[in-house]
Amino acid sequence: MDFLGDWLYLIIGIAVVGVLVLVGLLTGSRRKVPPGRGTDVIAPPEPGAPADVEAPAEPGAGTVEEAEAPAPAAPTLEKPEGTASRLVRLRQRLAGSQGTLGRGLLALLSRDRLDEDTWESIEDTLLTADIGVAPTTQLVERLRSRLRVEGQPADARAVLREELLELVDPTMDRRLQVSGADGKPGVVLVVGVNGAGKTTTVGKLARILVAEDRTVKLGAADTFRAAAVEQLATWGERVGVDVVRGPEGSDPASVAFEAVKQGVEEGVDTVLVDTAGRLQNKAGLMDELGKVKRVIEKQAPVTEVLLVLDATTGQNGMIQARVFSEIVDVTGIVLTKLDGSAKGGIVVAVQRELGVPVKLVGLGEGADDLAPFDAGAFVDALLGG
Image (cartoon, rainbow, N blue to C red; front, side, top):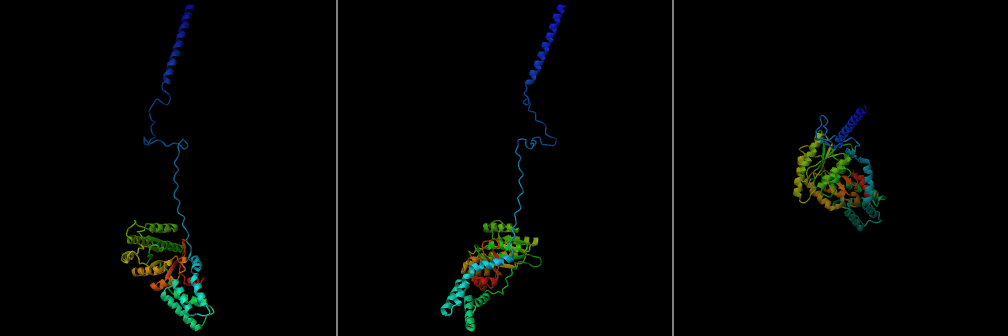
């Protein structure tokens, strides 16, 4: 029995050792491949997804998400000033800059004795104000005649106002022809030398028309000056007016034609065309402006030709006026920088020279500093308010 018991314990012991060895071998074989490093197998993509595109990371999973770019904000359109308030400012600005002429004349006319020296001083004062020789002679003769017949007036200012108003001619038709016929837009051709404020005038005139609830199209036909095209585009953006433009140096007539063509197709009220203002030689300018006008009128008649003059240039402005009047049929004059000049007599001189009215005056650098010309307000300003 003892012998059999010993054998039984020995067999059980060998079996336990075998089991332990087997367990050790199995455990060791599993540890030979570290978790996550024993395979190059890529998980199959989701059904329908390209095999070489990684699945997007979940938000917050260690990646920085690209923010969606915000849509550009629509530009805020400006509300241009109405005509009534422009006229109020016209009187104020002119009274501040033009009163020197009137005060000088009144001081001379109010003397106890009007001798020849006094009348010569009156003539000099008028000529210095750029009124021109012929209008000055006419005004002095009329004043002398009235004073000879009526005697020394109690109110020299009233007499001078009447005569100056007659000289400026309040009967001239100063309405802007900005409407077309037969459903076509009015077409306004703006001409003048570079530096007179031509492109700025086009932009400011667009504001006047927008303030009157008119639809407007701009044509940037001064194609040889990139700055002029960009400037006009800026004016248009501020009030929501489209600008037709071409490549730098392109044919101005083709740009003008396209602007009017689009204006006709879109049914706008008015097309404003800015033109080149080079004066190197009259023949070249004549050919260019003549071509622009002819090409435009294949689409719609030109209803207004505005000549822009710098009021501070005096007699140089008169020379420019003559040149342009020979090239195109000028129908109205725009005098810029009138607020900065005490020589407001150019209004009289240029009207006499061309036989056409001053229709608009520029009164400063502001966007709405362009106003319809008012003869009464102008004469009052000359007389100091």
